Image 1 (cartoon, rainbow, N blue to C red):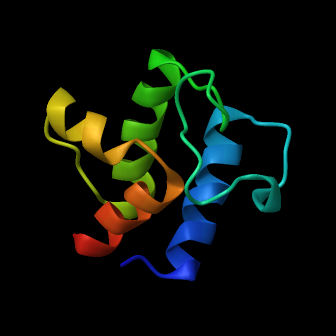
Image 2: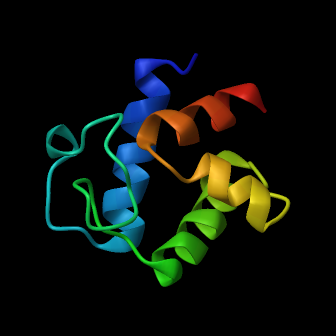
Length: 85
């Protein structure tokens, strides 16, 4: 299970790298990041930026598309991945 500190760092990374005009408090840990059903409504370009950001900021490498589809779901799933590395 991810720590609150890791979730906060992931939210900060999302805001900075994707240039979101919102505060970390506005991002819920378990809201979907992609798609129109709540959350941030990110797209495939954003996904690429997240993969690069995770590698640069957390030294966490997502190996392939199948792994990315499981990891880049919510702040919680990303933080779990980072903490599991």
